Length: 346
Image (cartoon, rainbow, N blue to C red):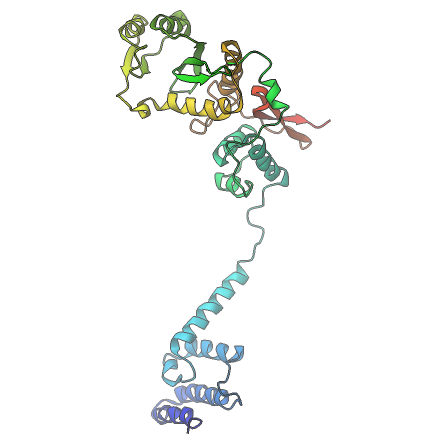
């Protein structure tokens, strides 16, 4: 009885076919015969072949009443086959052609090299590549970074460590501990527009008089900024504000526990900590001042700021002058950081 059931389902479709046009009868007759051929197969549940799927996909296109005679499968199944075929068709015609060329192998290697040598992220590498006149997108740089993100606390080689500890060690408004567990204070003045470090100094005993002296040294020839932003530390009291006003500048106090109001300064402190302080042991005031002199020189002249897309003091892009030129790394800050430039191959 079970084997007769599929044939009984087809009887209503044969009867309805008697009242259709000759053209529709031919199409529906083909549909019914195709399904009968499926049920004639010897297996208890006949498997549909690719030719069966192709037939019903074509029927869906040729006849608007194709679903009325469909018994072997659900109409949703045919629609799914059609969508799958559409996807295969577009994959075939969308195979990679000429399109946009892949970036050269040497550029991909350079991206990975910058990430490994400096621990830089995609934005930092993208900015450095612009200074080498290498035009790639930020998404492209991200794609070719090492699978494992660079460790911000990566180990430095022992060759780098002695370079930064030749002298005895040494830290604006932030503290640096020394090898003897003493605290050194660093004061700096930063230009918020260009992010350039205008002046800095180090001391063991910060006082208002010392800060006033730094303000005078940082603003020679009446070049003081219009505003000077600082926090509410007791060192920056009324005498310091008076000295700032004497330089024709206006003191601006940040709110209590609101470092974000002086974001450029806080950002530089974090950058200096990650790129310098976390990798050295400060011995004394002299050593710290030497380290900061080296780092500030690199920061102002070489390091490309991701927001301004330039070094604070300005750094023109270097085009590649010949096909034999290669990119070399110039060590900065004792090898902790690098600047990249083109040189002719030997």
